Length: 200
Image 1: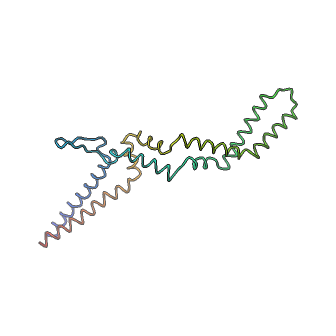
Image 2: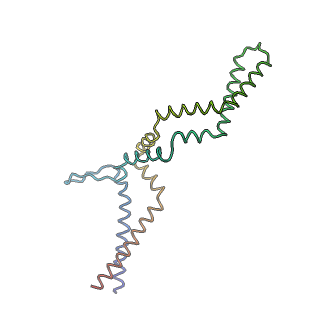
Image 3: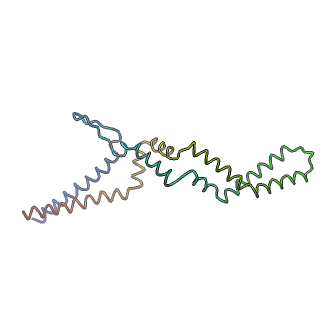
């Protein structure tokens, strides 16, 4: 009989702990929009929707200052293989222009000399030219483009339901663990309460 009472209290405690954690997780997002509570003139809203602009700004700053920069993006894009491809495209484009613009009366031998000169020049100095050009582009882009602002605008443009879906899909397992932990702790607290009641 005593054991049954303790078990009942433990099950009730587990249910309370489990449901409390489910509600707490839901309240991170819901209500999505402010809901006014009558009489007390107070509105409630989920933590993430309420602080969405602050969160978006913070994420944008972290990405720009600690994770990613325009320089790193360009450095990745300007690997040896990519530079070789760019040089090849430049050579082909210049040779096409020479072929189209030079009069047909110019002997082939001279045209071939020009093609060879262009190829040699691009192979020799192309990488430096491309690097200088990219550096100027990065400097200009750094003045005009802010990664943090782009990220912030992108997050703020999401529907809040979409943000909830993204976060829940990423942290589904961890959130489930929190729910279960609430039940386990509630169960233990229920047993402790039952034992205390029996001893009094």
